Structure formats: C-alpha cells, structure tokens
Length: 212
Ligand SMILES: C[S@@+](CC[C@H](N)C(=O)[O-])C[C@H]1O[C@@H](n2cnc3c(N)ncnc32)[C@H](O)[C@@H]1O
Image 1 (tube, rainbow, N blue to C red):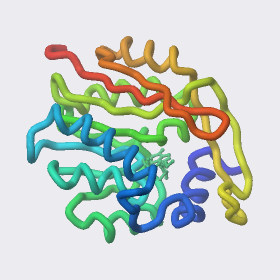
Image 2: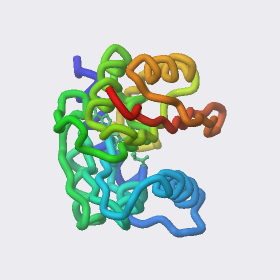
Image 3: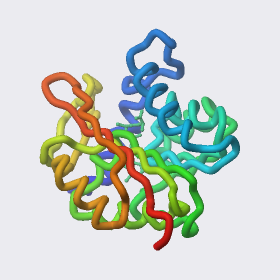
Image 4: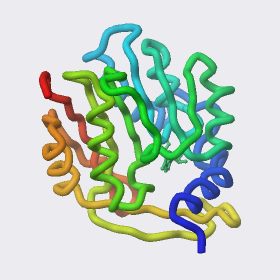
C-alpha cells in the first residue's frame, strides 16, 4: 500500500498541468485571489526580505508574486511541480522535498506562506510542522496559511478528471488550527473563510512573537 506522501507526490506529478496552467490571466479569479493575499502580506515586509513558499506547486502565481519583491524559496514534494516552477519562476530558488522532514536554519525567513498544502500532510504530523515553521521564522515574522475549515481525512481517485490521479487530504477544523498556532507561540492577526464549491478552507494570518 502506498503511503499518503507517495500518493500526494505521484498525484501532483500527474495532475500538475490540470491543477494550474503556466500562466494565469489577471482577470482570472485565482490570480486575483492570490494577488490580494500576497499583497496583504507584502505590505508588512520590506523589499529584499526572505520568504518561504511551502507546497509552492508550479510557482504560479504565489511564488511568482512573492519573487517580485522578496528573496523566495519554494518547496514542493512533486518533482514535476518543482521542474515547472524552476522554469516559470527562475528568479526564485526551489527545493524538491517533504516540508515536514526538511530543515532550515532558525529565524531564516521574514515570511512563510503555505497555501492549500498542509492539508495534504497526515494530521498527526501537522502540529509538529507548525512548530518548525515557527522556528524558521524571524521574530515578528509572518505566516499565511490555508488550512481546512472542517475536519476530514480521505482520498480520491482520478482527481480533477485525470486518469490515475489519486490524491490524499487530511485536515483538522479551523478551531484546532487556531489553537495549535497559539500553542506554538503565534499571535493570530485574523482568519477568513474561503469558500470553494460546497465547502471551503480557512485562511489564517499569524505573526511570531517578538521574543521567544
Ligand atoms: C493544492 S496544491 C497548492 C499549490 C500552491 N500552494 C497554490 O496554492 O497554488 C498543494 C501543493 O502542495 C504540495 N505538497 C503536498 N504535500 C507536500 C509535502 N509534504 N511537502 C511539500 N509539498 C507538498 C503538492 O505537491 C502541491 O504542489
């Protein structure tokens, strides 16, 4: 039986192009959504500061937007996503790997975004990952995180209509994520419900405290 991580890695290798095109039109709803999120974060940062995009996909559009002003590192478990990201956002650096087993230096980043990606990691690993994210941020650094809204763990076959495109998700509910983040030491600046189809996600904007 395949592990959840293997299902996700092979799944995104298969669905990469269906999930996201090489380019988004500025009139596209997704373009505008990500642009407003990255602009919302960017107003708290200075040009040239460091940002980490965890689960960056093909880099379009979040890594691309961040790379316009910041020194960005993108991480993704899918080699196909990373290969595309390297071509589409050549000004950023990329690492192909599992974000929960990677290590960065403490206080390396001014900001970390993780958009629709933690929800693909088995739930039992997620609180520990949030602790690592906290360590990787500089004091008063920012986290923008898309989590689940309701608790659910499950799988799908032929996801997005792609034959053989299996996928795995695992997430807690909004209240649990807010509690985990506060337990780690984050201050929650705001959170917002992001509707999608019959359900939705939670977008959380949090800040690391000034002193440990
Ligand atoms: C739903 S896509 C989101 C991509 C991008 N963040 C966006 O919002 O457009 C989730 C991405 O997270 C990546 N991912 C899932 N689990 C991961 C893990 N354990 N480590 C690194 N990347 C992971 C997937 O390969 C995929 O590219």
